[in-house]
Length: 115
Image (cartoon, rainbow, N blue to C red; front, side, top):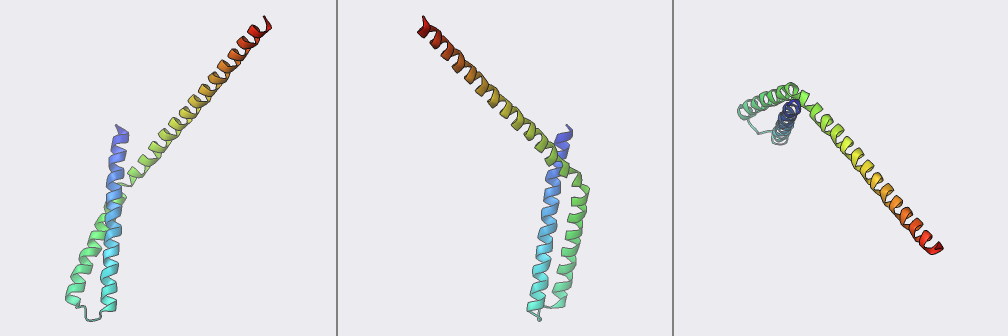
């Protein structure tokens, strides 16, 4: 149950972080346009810049709120590490049994040859 909440928070964190970066990129483009085209009017720049700044702040606040979801990836990593460890142990056990079978077969063959 807790993992489900963590993964939901992780999803919300990722979305919030994405929006914060997207807003920052849009604001950068807006300011670059203002710098390159000096004729870009202030009555357009100021409202758009303000809206983007508020958008970025809201996205950052949500990213901060859902930062707990960052631990969801760590929980999954531990589980996958355990699964990988079990897989390795199973493979080693399989090889050990195979070698024992070959050894038993060779001993049987050697006994038949002696008689």
